[in-house]
Length: 232
Image 1 (cartoon, rainbow, N blue to C red):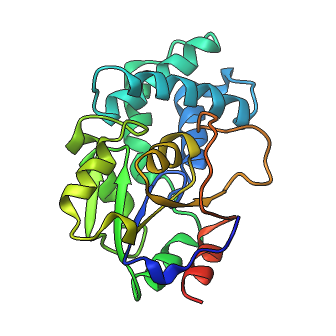
Image 2 (cartoon, helix red, strand yellow):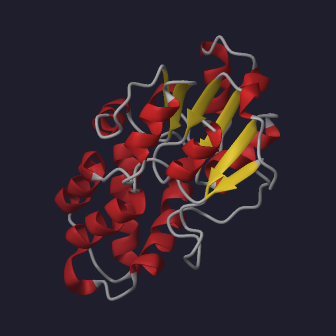
């Protein structure tokens, strides 16, 4: 993929979970804590199963992300013959605030904020994202959550809400994300430039993100490499 002319862009919008926050580590730890020793599957197998449950729930009538998490946890448990207690599923839902940032996220965002205006479009509740934002070293100028738009990406409502709120022309916005399914497919359909942070580049399977096909304008393995290119 060709290198972008970053001089074209005034604002960067980010996905959070999977791009800036290491949600696969957080999900795997949280599911094993909730479901106990009965899950003999690998993390990648369990994550793919979780991703299918989560995306199915998000495609239906709007549920708070806490409820999506709890129901997806219970669904994974049932697939392995485990009846997760309501308390265990709720603990898993609350664990979002404990999911770690990728080691390069905070430094990259601080660097990028010296040149670009930053926003985030996240499939999350307002209060849970606020806990994650504290791990990322910056305050985003624009925050669009699933709770605010009452839907989940890849539904385009996050992007449409961002267009309404941001005083930046669409062709001056670059969307930055890991998930082809949640982010790049809708971004490209709406005519947005996009950059792929391909966190799973050296790992088989799709992890917690359902597989999809999209053609971002740029691909880098992590946020550090992205920031180096953007600020060169």
